[in-house]
Image (cartoon, rainbow, N blue to C red):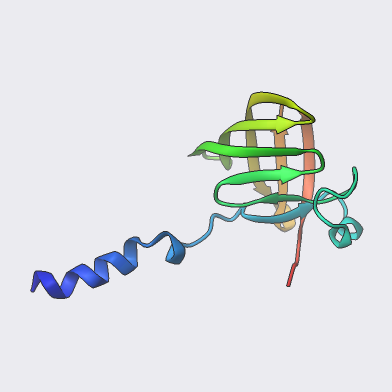
Length: 116
Protein backbone atom coordinates (compact mmCIF):
# COMPACT_ATOMS: atom_id res chain seq x y z
CA UNK A 1 0.00 0.00 0.00
CA UNK A 2 2.80 2.44 0.91
CA UNK A 3 4.55 1.90 -2.43
CA UNK A 4 1.36 3.01 -4.21
CA UNK A 5 1.13 6.22 -2.15
CA UNK A 6 4.74 7.38 -2.57
CA UNK A 7 4.36 8.49 -6.23
CA UNK A 8 1.19 10.37 -5.33
CA UNK A 9 2.90 12.12 -2.42
CA UNK A 10 5.81 13.11 -4.67
CA UNK A 11 3.41 14.66 -7.20
CA UNK A 12 1.46 16.55 -4.54
CA UNK A 13 4.64 17.88 -2.90
CA UNK A 14 6.30 18.89 -6.17
CA UNK A 15 6.96 22.68 -6.28
CA UNK A 16 6.32 22.68 -10.03
CA UNK A 17 2.74 21.64 -9.38
CA UNK A 18 2.20 23.95 -6.44
CA UNK A 19 -0.27 26.77 -7.06
CA UNK A 20 1.39 30.15 -7.50
CA UNK A 21 0.73 32.84 -4.95
CA UNK A 22 -1.70 35.53 -6.17
CA UNK A 23 1.05 38.19 -6.23
CA UNK A 24 3.22 36.20 -8.67
CA UNK A 25 3.20 37.87 -12.08
CA UNK A 26 4.12 41.01 -13.96
CA UNK A 27 2.80 44.31 -12.60
CA UNK A 28 2.92 47.90 -13.92
CA UNK A 29 1.83 51.23 -12.48
CA UNK A 30 -0.21 51.98 -15.63
CA UNK A 31 -1.75 49.56 -18.15
CA UNK A 32 0.19 51.27 -20.97
CA UNK A 33 3.47 50.30 -19.24
CA UNK A 34 2.67 46.59 -19.61
CA UNK A 35 4.07 46.72 -23.14
CA UNK A 36 7.49 47.88 -21.90
CA UNK A 37 10.16 45.24 -21.33
CA UNK A 38 10.98 44.54 -17.68
CA UNK A 39 14.01 46.60 -16.68
CA UNK A 40 13.77 48.88 -19.74
CA UNK A 41 13.45 52.29 -18.10
CA UNK A 42 11.64 53.89 -15.21
CA UNK A 43 8.18 53.02 -16.56
CA UNK A 44 8.96 49.34 -16.92
CA UNK A 45 6.92 46.71 -15.10
CA UNK A 46 7.93 44.82 -11.98
CA UNK A 47 8.04 41.02 -12.02
CA UNK A 48 7.38 38.91 -8.95
CA UNK A 49 8.21 35.21 -9.10
CA UNK A 50 8.21 32.62 -6.32
CA UNK A 51 11.84 33.55 -5.57
CA UNK A 52 12.49 37.11 -6.83
CA UNK A 53 11.13 40.63 -7.21
CA UNK A 54 12.75 42.59 -10.03
CA UNK A 55 12.30 45.71 -12.09
CA UNK A 56 14.21 48.70 -13.42
CA UNK A 57 17.74 48.68 -11.95
CA UNK A 58 16.95 46.31 -9.07
CA UNK A 59 16.63 42.63 -8.27
CA UNK A 60 15.62 41.18 -4.91
CA UNK A 61 15.78 37.60 -3.72
CA UNK A 62 12.80 36.68 -1.56
CA UNK A 63 14.15 35.40 1.76
CA UNK A 64 10.82 35.00 3.56
CA UNK A 65 7.12 35.53 2.87
CA UNK A 66 4.63 35.83 5.68
CA UNK A 67 0.89 35.90 5.09
CA UNK A 68 -0.99 38.60 6.98
CA UNK A 69 -4.68 39.47 7.21
CA UNK A 70 -4.17 42.19 4.64
CA UNK A 71 -1.78 40.39 2.27
CA UNK A 72 1.89 39.40 2.44
CA UNK A 73 5.05 40.71 4.03
CA UNK A 74 8.28 39.86 2.22
CA UNK A 75 11.81 40.02 3.56
CA UNK A 76 14.08 40.71 0.58
CA UNK A 77 17.81 40.72 -0.14
CA UNK A 78 18.19 43.36 -2.87
CA UNK A 79 20.81 44.68 -5.24
CA UNK A 80 20.31 48.00 -7.01
CA UNK A 81 22.91 49.92 -8.99
CA UNK A 82 25.77 48.20 -7.14
CA UNK A 83 24.28 48.64 -3.68
CA UNK A 84 23.04 45.73 -1.59
CA UNK A 85 20.32 46.05 1.06
CA UNK A 86 17.76 44.12 3.05
CA UNK A 87 14.21 45.34 2.56
CA UNK A 88 10.79 44.57 3.96
CA UNK A 89 7.93 45.03 1.53
CA UNK A 90 4.22 44.58 2.08
CA UNK A 91 1.94 43.54 -0.76
CA UNK A 92 -1.84 43.54 -0.76
CA UNK A 93 -4.38 42.69 -3.46
CA UNK A 94 -6.97 45.46 -3.53
CA UNK A 95 -10.15 46.28 -5.46
CA UNK A 96 -10.09 45.28 -9.10
CA UNK A 97 -7.18 42.88 -8.62
CA UNK A 98 -4.62 45.66 -8.26
CA UNK A 99 -1.49 45.16 -6.18
CA UNK A 100 -0.68 47.68 -3.44
CA UNK A 101 2.98 47.83 -2.35
CA UNK A 102 4.33 49.53 0.77
CA UNK A 103 7.98 49.63 1.80
CA UNK A 104 11.10 51.72 2.13
CA UNK A 105 10.84 52.65 -1.57
CA UNK A 106 7.43 54.23 -0.97
CA UNK A 107 3.86 53.21 -1.69
CA UNK A 108 2.80 52.15 -5.16
CA UNK A 109 -0.24 50.65 -6.85
CA UNK A 110 0.03 48.27 -9.79
CA UNK A 111 -2.18 46.63 -12.40
CA UNK A 112 -1.53 43.06 -13.50
CA UNK A 113 0.02 42.74 -16.95
CA UNK A 114 -1.13 39.90 -19.17
CA UNK A 115 1.90 38.27 -20.76
CA UNK A 116 1.91 35.46 -23.34
